[in-house]
Image (cartoon, rainbow, N blue to C red; front, side, top):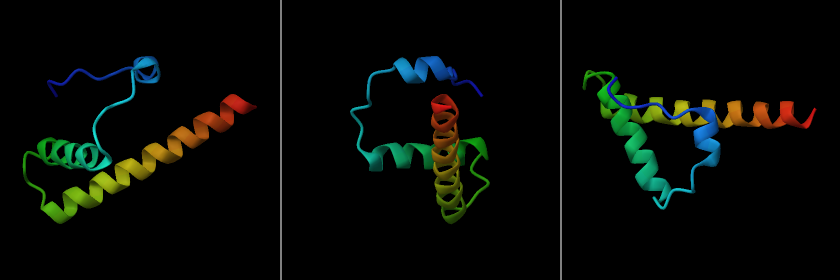
Length: 69
């Protein structure tokens, strides 16, 4: 991948995005398609994007629970 990954700390300190939820979601779908070199259907790309979003939500919840302990 040629994109520079953001560290967790950088993500925490980054200003909020001005993008709409739809724009962000569509960018994730496009990133999934790019990751699979276009060898993935639109339905599969959307499913993978939703799965990634769900996983990220759970990971963030777990992190917050661990911080509270």
